[in-house]
Image (cartoon, rainbow over all chains, first blue to last red; front, side, top):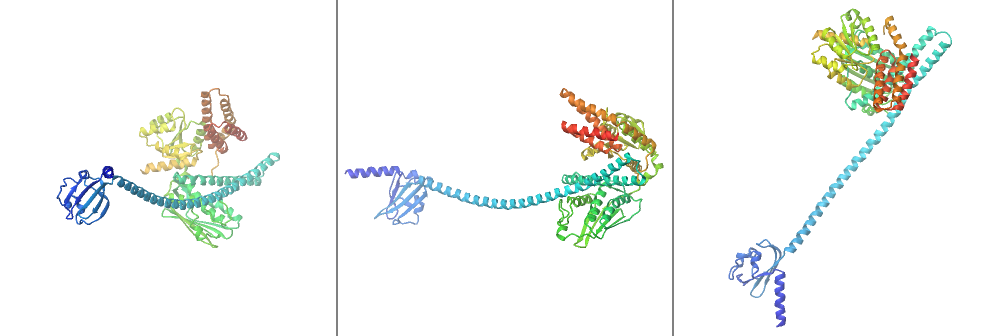
Amino acid sequence: MASEVLKNQINQQLFRKLELAYLCTDRSLKVVEASSRLPDYGYTNVSVGDDVGEHIDFMIGLDSDTKLDLPFVISPSGIPVSVSLLPSDNLLTILFTNASMQAEQRQALQQKANENELLVRQQRVLMAQIAKASIELESKNDDLREAARLQSRFLSGVSHEFRTPLTSIIGYTNLLQRDDKQSTESEALSPDEGDVSSDYLRAVQRSSKHLLSLVENLLDHGKFDSDEIVIRPGVCNLSEVFEDIRLLLSSLANTKQVEFILTQYFSEDVYVIADDSRLRQCLLNIVGNAVKFTDQGSVEVIASFSDEKLSVSVKDTGNGISTEDLSKIRLPFYQAPDTGKAGTGLGLTITERLIELMGGELLIESELDVGTTVKFNMPMARTTIGQATSSKADSTALSILMAEDDSDIAELLMMMLSERGIDVSHVTNGALAVDAVKSGSFDLILMDIHMPIMSGYEAMKALQAAGNTIPVAVMSASGLDSDRLQALEYGCTAYLVKPVEIDEIVVLANQLVENNVSQ
Amino acid sequence: MSTPESPQVAAIRARYQSNLMEKAKLLATRSDAIRKAQSEQVLQQARQDLREDLHKLAGSSGMYGYNDISALCRKAMSDVDDNDAGELDKCMAELQDVIRQHA
């Protein structure tokens, strides 16, 4: 009895804790008994005598002898239940147990598994990225090593290139000092000794200019990187340009016993519109390289001008350039190895860029142990302006207003311009310049910038507001492109950097007058 | 090929050359004013005065062919802008020397 009571109590406890529900059927699957908890799982309205398949759809197709455990079934109420089918002699008992906790645990495990899978995949992606970054880093390291090597060569080249002309300058100035000391101690220099001194001075000047061009090369390279290079076309005599190249480089070629030939297929009176200084820079570099890299034989320069196009060919009998180096020599700082010649490695890079900016094209052909030919062509318009400078009569028609507060500069310029037959009116500040324009008639206004009372910029603004049509040429001590651009914004037609050459003013004035006449 | 100078232009150049020492003295006075400035306001004015005179001399000396004087004036202007008293003193001393050589 006691054990029976205990058994009942245990059963009741188990039923309650496990939230058990049951349903019994006979062998024809008709309901004979149903627990009161069945509606908790959504099995409602189960009555004795009902076909069990009407209430429990997974029973369809099963018979009363089926013994089965279904661990997770979603009951009609949504609660996960564990279902056990327990056949006995005449009955089939279907037992339902709340499986919510097991279902949650199973879901949590699955979630963890999913997260692990994702982590593994992410790790694989990161590893791939690290591998790729390592390869790129190695490649960058190679680039840096190459850049360091080129920089080292560049510094070595620059040092040598600067030392050479500086040594020349110091040497020749020492000689001049010695000559000067001798002349003060004894009589004045004889004509021959005077010629030698002039030669020394010219040599110093050449070296100074070469040094300046080296510095400008370095600055230009920096400017190319920031797109600051400006081409400034002006009137240019082609024959003078090539004559200067011949003077500068033929003596160097002669000292190496290399024949230097320069042939110009145009006359001395050919004037063109071109950036004189940049054209010289390109020629100096190309012809200079030819002379530098030729130890025997010849350097031949041929220049022609037709159909408004300058064509130049520079052919040398130097060692030539290999195909591999030929593809690289236009790169900044690159120099063909084993030439034994120092340099910055910038000249050809800058030259090619300048030629392109001036509308031209550079071509290089070379063969090892035979020589190299460098060619370029450049469009340039022909003009007759330059020829006017030789005619004093033409410049007597010119009238210039000069606004310059420095009396020393004004006095010199006025005298030199007057001697060329130009009528010059002088004022000392921008306000007076504006008044003078109202009451006078001028072909050109030369405007200083820094003046008292009213600056050149303010005067130009006032003239612009008043509808001034007289060309204004700024004379400034600043060579910065930013100042030049600012002056252009204020309406100036030309920008002259002090010290200003008188011929530059005369040519400019004639050019502007001709432009005004033709409009 | 440059044309020879007229006597008038030569006379103007000679006059400029003879006035170089006056310009050097003026610059020396300006430099002294900077050294002796007692207040920030006075110092700023003195530096501005020196800079203006250096600017003028840089321009005119270049026009007259004294490129070394012009270059040194520009260097000194840069030292004034950078407020580098040590470099300015060195540059001014060198400028005085060069002007003396040409005068």
